[in-house]
Image (cartoon, rainbow, N blue to C red; front, side):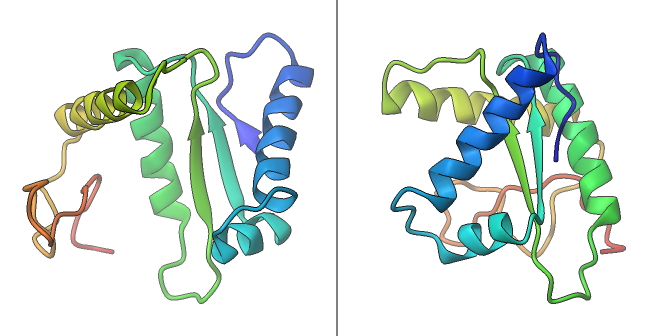
Length: 137
């Protein structure tokens, strides 16, 4: 299930995927949907070098491919996971800043308009991040 890796070996790639599965399925993970998606193998795990512009471009392309193949009419759920094994955050605040930086980079590279069904204001209760919306979905 894992792809887009620039990890050195297939063993490293498999370990990342197995660690993620163990985290969701064998620890006290609170999300029932995540457990279901992993049990049914309905996830797309993608590995990226770092939280930077080069990885963001690859991530955006992978998200576009994922959205294109997703069946929005189906009741079958899937999840897209982006893993950055070379990025280490020293605190929750550092993670939050890194996440918002990545989202801004993705937005800057996105060639589609913001989904009009949601707000682009992070302070709005109707905020939702929008990527690759082309009104055909």
